[in-house]
Image 1 (spheres, helix red, strand yellow):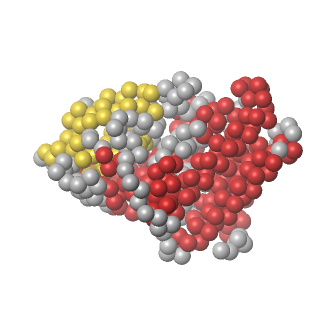
Image 2 (cartoon, rainbow, N blue to C red; image 1 turned 90 degrees about the horizontal axis):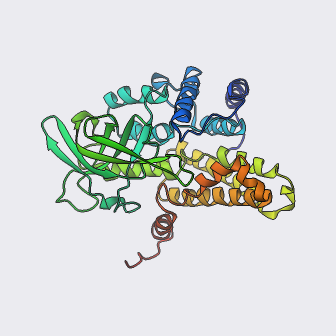
Amino acid sequence: MDLDLSAADVEFRDEVREWLREHVPREPLPSLETEEGFAAHRRWEQELHEARLSVVSWPEEFGGRGASLLQWVLFEEEYYAAGAPGRVSQNGIFLLAPTLFEHGTPDQQQRYLPRMAAGTDIWAQAWSEPEAGSDLASIRSTARRVDGGWLLSGQKTWSSRAAFADRAFGLFRSDPEAQRHRGLTYFLFPLDADGVTVRPIGRIDGKPAFAELFLDEVFVPDEDVLGGVGEGWRVAMSTASNERGLTLRSPGRFLATAQKLAELPDALDDDRVVDAWIAAQAYRLATFETVTKVTGGGSLGAEASLNKLFWSELDIEMHETAWDLLGPEAELSSWVEGYLFSLAGPIYAGTNEIQRNVAAERLLGLPRGSR
C-alpha cells in the first residue's frame, strides 16, 4: 500500500479544496429530509455537476472526470472537511451507479447516468418490505410478464429518499415458483408512474426521510430490467456490497466528525475522543488498502460486512461522545440531526446482526447457526 501522493493527485486535491472554499454555502442548507431542503440540495448537486465535481471518478462521457479511485477518496476527504452539504443523490451515485457500470446495458448507462450526475434524477431504494427487511430473499412484491415488459405489484417500505425522489430501484419476484434466492429480477422505475403511491414516513424528528411505496400493476418496459430476468439476487448483491463497502461511507465523513469532536470543550481530556480520532484514521488507512486491492484487480466481498460494522458503530460512538460532552446543550446543537441519523446505521445496508453472521460464516469459517 503506497501512501505517497503523486503530483497529479496533489494537483487534483488542491483544485477541489480551492473550489469548495469558494462555493460551499456559508449557511447550512435546510435539511434534505424536507421538501425545501431536498430542492436546495438538488440545486447544489447541479452546481457540483457544472464544475464536474459531482461524480469525479466516472468516465467523462457520463459527467465525470475519469479520476482514480484514490482521487475520489481525496475528494471525499476535502468535501467533508469543507463542511459541504449532504449528498441528496447518494442512492444513485454511490449505490445504483456502480451497479449500472457493472451490469447495465450501454443504453441504460446512457439514459440514466448523465441525468444522475446532473441531479436531474434523484433515486430512492425499493428493497425492504413489511415482512422482508434484512432477509431480502423473502420479498413478496411481484413482477408479472406482459407484452413488452412487466407489471410490478406490492409494497416497499423504509425507502430512503422516496418521499421526494424521482425514480427507484429494487427487487421483485418474477418467478413465484423458484427458490428464495432465484426468480428475482432487479427493476428501475419512475415514482410518478401510474399505479405508484408514495406515502412518506416520518423519522423520530418528524422529517420524512423514508416512504412506503405501494405499486398496483405498474408497467415497466423490458429495457428497465437491470442485469437480466431472474438475475436480481446477483445484481442486488453488487449494490449491497457498494452500500456496505467503499462508496457509501467514505473515511472523509468520519475524519471530519472526529475533528469536530476534538474541538468541543474539554474534548481532549476524554479518552473516547482520542479513540474516535484513532478509529477514523484507522478507517482511512483501511480504505487506502481497499483502494490498492481494487485497483490491482481485486474485489471487495464479505469484507464489506466488516466495513459496515465498523463505520456504523463508530458513527454512533462519536455522536454519543459529543452528546455527553455538551450535556443539555447538545439538544440545541448542530449534532442533533447527525446523532439521529447515526442511530439508523446499524439497521440500513443490512442490520449489523446479519453482517456479523456474514463475517462469522464467510470470513471466519464458523458453522452456520441454527434457525
